[in-house]
Image (tube, rainbow, N blue to C red; front, side):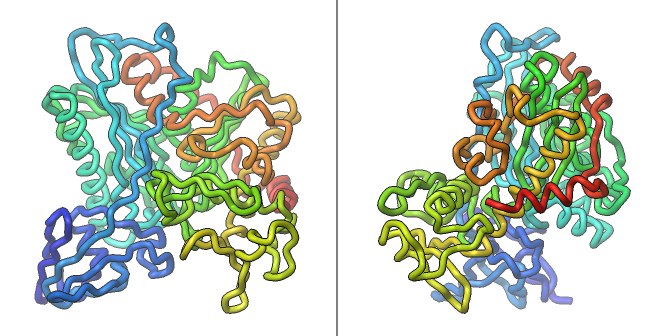
Length: 513
């Protein structure tokens, strides 16, 4: 079969693929990050590219457009999530120090489903020399881990390619950090990585097929340590890489790392640790035990699966309030390009308060809304579907509000079930730690306004940012914390919410806004 060359701009990276392959497949072959939350089903519209044909630019979806000749493809600029730091965790006196000797360098990794983040650490001083992030290349295989597991099972070599792409992205981060710090990557002698169970398996090249169906078989839940060269990392000779232990197939090493970051053994209990993403992972620390669960929240709080969704990058509406009209806070201060998760949460909370959205999540019909005229004038119907114009082509739809209801109901129901497992009331919680990108941008008033957490949590929320990276950094500085992580993972009690009688009932109750 004939093969054609596809050149991707602006990076000028090229790949040769067989005639009939999609542009998305060519991007994966070239190792070029391309966002495809629907895993190539043509449903999300996020993989838009431009194909240059002479002087003409043709717009197409990369997952559907076929390569029938040599092509030049222009990719959109990637939306990058800023690196979050967790300064509240560590004072200078509390910061753990490297338990080895010598001026060695280490790298901490957060293997996020959407974003990869790395920190370069001087192990002699404990100082963080720099942080860097990049889009996870596995978004080309789908936004959620279920899509990625399905992709890994689609072809005998798919997992190997996924692992290669992931490691290549990590190597790019290490080179970038080394250049900024003025060191060679060969000086890095230790790497500690944390991610959900699927991401850690892919990173190490472990089989993931069993993670995709009940009873969710894992290759290992233990921390894994091996030579970095076995993984493919471009670091020092003899350097070791360690991944965090996981609690289960769906409560992974990133959650364990987050618990290490907040000092799970020392915080006042009862407390709740919550990481809001595509999966809402939660751990209740109460009655001398750790009770963990995971819920399928969906990706709306990461700016996905919504009409004008995007991540918290330049041009994203990150906060919304209502005065006489909508007041939009846009990342970078320019014109809005879309709506990220925190902005969506703010918007729904504000529209509910203004009675533009009902308690059942119904967007008011045009002409029927009360309140400021400027606000009501934004409502319209298209093809019988209710929508609201935020700015230009940036809209919120009835379907978007429904996604918020489903996500917040899943998380709230999980929290309520865990409280029931501990035989306690939510009012007894001393602190609720909210982690992840969502925990960097979300507002307490909006979280409580939509009922994602009980009102008893008011004044108790601690937004802790990228706790996974912080936990990996702490473990890099103090190897004994990996022993603590192993104990946390081993002793936690994981509750499978799906078969419980309490979860469906709590989910139905939590659908109300």
